[in-house]
Length: 260
Image (cartoon, rainbow, N blue to C red):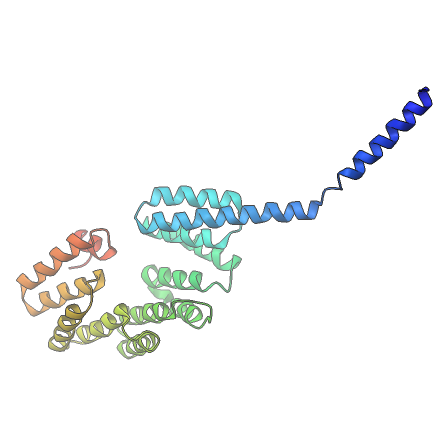
């Protein structure tokens, strides 16, 4: 075989090899890479939420860090980060986290609900804005728990002693889920805050007889019995709160002396 023929054969073989491997679809590869990053951010954020619910805030922060490494503009990660920083009393950081989450996902109902909760609990001068965020969440047809948002709005109104408005929100929640415990307890709390002690005491006793105990229900029972002067009953509710819900915000607040 002459040198020319060998070269010609090599060129033909090279061309055939090139035809056997089609050109790389860069767009498809980039889309696949972005999807993997999004799924990684989603998984790490969900894990962070689980650790947050367990009170393992340091581990939650580690998971959020991984989520944001995968997807720096992933709004749900900033949402959970805001909740963690709120729990750590890092209110300035929490504010920045929630605002970033809202900027990245301005129509996300869960973020609206959580940002409303932050404003209601930590910035009472912005209570109207908090309630607006709750209403945006509640009116989103894709939000799975509008009764929670309406109840949270009622609790905010209760904090500033706007009892009629609070009742309306609690009833709105109950129109969606008729036995929603937090809304039922909210209505009893309205009676208590208005000074209708006997009525509130009777309704709460009935509620506790027919529903599982909850931290907010036990705390309200404790406060009602203290107001009624029945320290023995109050101590019983305190014992139940600390025994069955030791990590709840209600139990922690009582232990720290912020609620009596």
